[in-house]
Image (cartoon, rainbow, N blue to C red; front, side, top):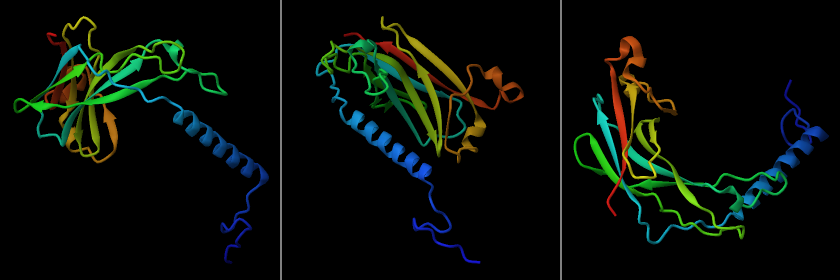
Length: 210
């Protein structure tokens, strides 16, 4: 028997009043979220940043080249009292921005770039006092098809060298069709019997002379 078309125009289904109430509530929530987001101020970049750091990405023993290697620096507002709370929930949102860093290849397996710790402009964005930005982390992303190999490090305020090495399986170049992010392992020995079939990505951040 052919399915009957309900009054909604969807084959074999007639919505209940409860279903409509849920749908309307979701639409209202989405509209409120969009409105709240649209009120977020335009955060500005510091026109004269003065705290440069050199970023170096070094790939060791990878069995094949990556499709791409990139760096993003995550900046976050540290004093949440300067941030306007969300209407309704009263929650204070976390304000952060991810900014890409241009890399230059300086060898077969080495890339460098420059980030600035004071790239984001400290300013009174909400009329509640000056918002102060800090660097949360610098993150390297090596891409193979749909797989992202991620390595992150937190730069030192003093400019002292900060470095992290993460190890990944050589099988990453084969099992890369599924979209996912891998942070690898902290030690090569974590791979057990397959430890010899691994490579690593080293991310180093150090302050540059001003």
